[in-house]
Image 1 (cartoon, rainbow, N blue to C red):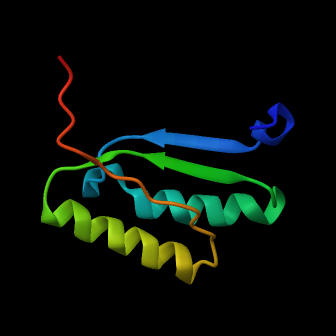
Image 2: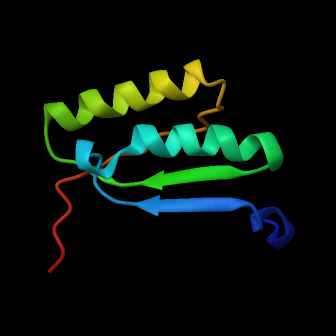
Length: 82
């Protein structure tokens, strides 16, 4: 990644759980883009169960409804740190 392209990137890290409120993060990004058009949001997180996967699908749908481009979605499954 070109260093000059990193200046407007927001990164969030946390499991895809309702209490992390990823949908609100999309709403906030949508507002930020009005004044910073090249702003980007990277969500990093894991999924533990079917409810988490359903939330991820809801996040994708919300991003589409806000006309936010989703470049890729990678899900970390059952990550255990030793």
